[in-house]
Image (cartoon, rainbow, N blue to C red):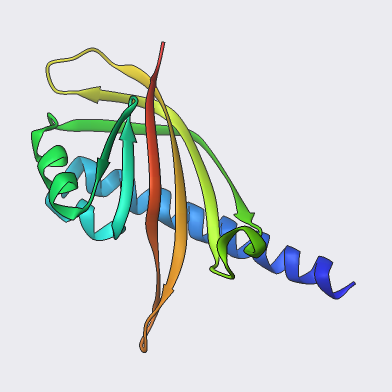
Length: 138
């Protein structure tokens, strides 16, 4: 019985984290892009339509090169990742679907998957992106 209660607690935590994260991430990419890399771990990897980008410097360069954007998330889902798969690190899988319009381009559908890990500091805890996979949908 205890393990099912622990799992329910993990699911609740994942749902709250995902909702907050989705709001922060897409508002940041649209309005405060220079701050976006603060949401990523130093070792994070972004795979953008099949092209891998790793490390803070490469991420900064990539995001600066993107035209301004208007993201609209139509739906997102989340689930906790079992701690056996993450060496005991609290991790959440977040999947978002929606539309994006980059300046000078037509609106397109996208799908984005994030692996978020919980980083605990002395004064607070913060979710950071460990892995991010973005794809346009055709």
